Length: 358
View 1: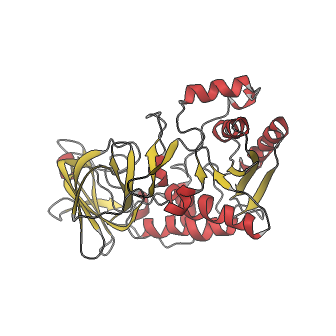
View 2: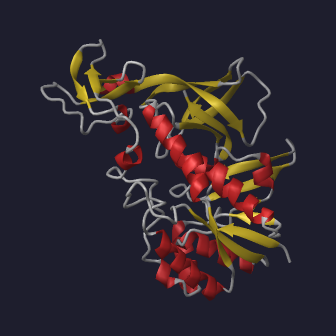
């Protein structure tokens, strides 16, 4: 019998994943990441994936483990989370970019350090699994594993997995990939996991109120807010409080139409604002591109490009540049292309690759 290490969070998705893996004949061993510093939270956050509810989630996991008859280990990754994820989050905001910490956490911690640390401790397992709504398959023609969107388009989480490698895909299972959320809830009821039905969905990385608390030790400088021509129209509280496309909390009045954040100038510590029309651009450049399902063989590739979670992938052409970066040229201009976010490339359901928007 093959043994599967299942990353678990205390939610319904990972619990039902355990049920499905058992039904498929696997021996399941669960593992959860401790992200909150056991010495106390130095930031005082009240929400998010590393918030004060973490001990409660572990209690729920103990209940799940007893119900399903599986061992669930807790691995302390709080220091690594601080160094690999929180520092990435802070440094990007301080430089005028808007990061996506969940993408980084998945590749570096959940699919990286979590299984590695268990193997280093002598734990033996054949495969790794998570409760993501995504799918994999092996393409005989290319000889590569492919990462696909989850069958439930409303729950698809492939975007968050754009930094996975062929080594990850070859040994990873996604038990929920073909299911809808409604079916997952039904399976939970059938297996007496009803106590998970009222639990909230996986939390956001951080609430809007808690966001500034991560920058307590940083010197946040206020500065000028300027229009598209560079004319000063107001003042800002510090670049960490703003992102492209933002309309709220700008403190502007007397405009004939709504104005938005259209740019962040880190060198001059300026927030650029203007009408919505200035948010539309027909191209972007991505750096540190990770090709997942394909190895590009031509200078140009047609794809649908997703520029953030919640954005409907838009058709365009990918152009591979001499330095390895990729320029994406959209068929029609897209709104609020944001530096620091991930642009992820699809061919239908197949996730081709992705990179950081410059």
